[in-house]
Structures are given as C-alpha cells and as structure tokens.
Amino acid sequence: MQRRKFIQLSALSGAALGISGISCGHRHQAYYNLLEKPAALSQICDLRTIRDIGMAYSLQAPAEAKAEKLETLLMTDSAGKPVSPDANAPVIQTLLEGKIKHDFETGDTVIVKGWVLAVTEARQCTLLFLHQQ
Image 1 (cartoon, rainbow, N blue to C red):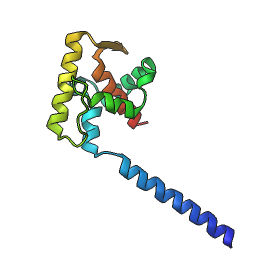
Image 2 (image 1 turned 180 degrees about the horizontal axis):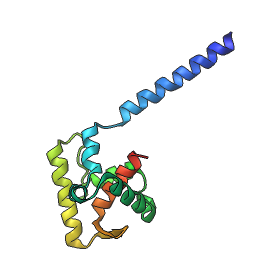
Image 3 (image 1 turned 90 degrees about the horizontal axis):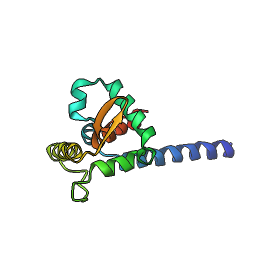
Image 4 (image 1 turned 45 degrees about the vertical axis):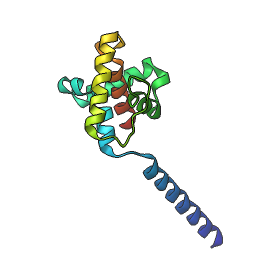
C-alpha cells in the first residue's frame, strides 16, 4: 500500500510541476498569433501551405529550428534591441512589417518551396510549424 501511494504522489507531483511550468513559460495566444502569421503570405496561402513552408525552412536553416530562437529573432528591432513580449499587437505588427520590408530592401530573402520570402516571413512560418507539431 505504501509503494502504491508513493507512486501516485510522485505522478501527481510531476504533473503539477509540469503544468505550472507550462503556464509560467508561455505567453498569451495573441502574441503567438502575430508572430506565427506572415500577414502578406497568409492572404494568398492556406494554413497548410504556410506550415509546409515552415517545415522546409526549418530543414534549410536548422540553427533556427527552435521556437525560442525564432521568437528572439522575430522580437528584435532593427537596432538589435529586444521588444517586450508584453508589447501590444499594433507594436508587434509594425515591428514585423518593418522587418519584412527591410529584408526585401536589403536582399535578405530565401527561396523556400518555390516562394521568394523575406527571412522574417520564413521564420514566422517555421514558428507556426513548430507550434503546431
């Protein structure tokens, strides 16, 4: 009986720690919706195509195939300064649009599955892919 109780308590403790760690480590859904949705691309592509682009880019750029790395890259302004994840939606949207425009202006583009994309757009697709695996 004591062994059974120990196993039950151990499992319950592990679940409680896991759940509390998950809720503390994640940001609100609106934050991810902005980061994961390349605005222009989502006007012409369906969700599956965007995920496929994300998967392909993760294979092209394996160093960027981690959600935390992509979030950091996406939430850094042109001066290299991180933008707060608590920033409101218009601030994040303006940041991403500016980064995409800058990528195209400077030639920081990639070809993924036949699409010519700003690196920022490819990163957004990859973040979506990673979150929906």
